[in-house]
Image 1 (cartoon, one colour):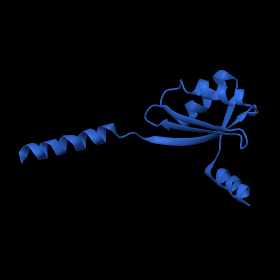
Image 2 (image 1 turned 135 degrees about the vertical axis):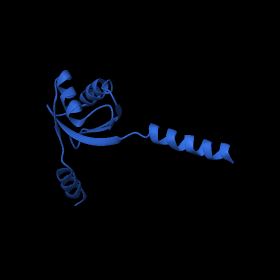
Image 3 (image 1 turned 45 degrees about the horizontal axis):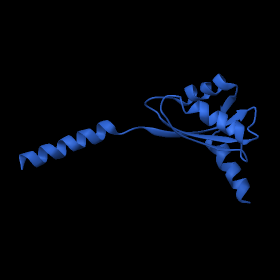
Image 4 (image 1 turned 90 degrees about the vertical axis):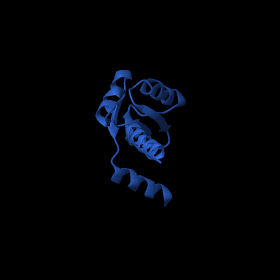
Amino acid sequence: MKKSIFTLLCLGVAATALAKDIKKVVFTTTPIMHCESCENKIKGNLRFEKGIKEITTSIENQRVFVTYDADKNTEEKIQKAFEKFGYKAQKVDNAEQSSKEEDKKQ
């Protein structure tokens, strides 16, 4: 009985310690992405930034979607990382993003 309670307690502590704060942010870039080469340049360079989990791009919508570990990186640092390879990134606000999605549906 004591062993099972101790084991459950240890598992609970381990699960809490391993929990990560994963966040998503959306950027638009200058100069604009106009080809697959641009996408590959962005993905290839951002993947080396600390805490980056996933990078998805959309040429059609001119968006870069970044999923990252907030314990290891911040939106501001990721935004500055674009400058290392010749792009300027601007965060897309949630209101702006949702209005563009609504326009696309209509």
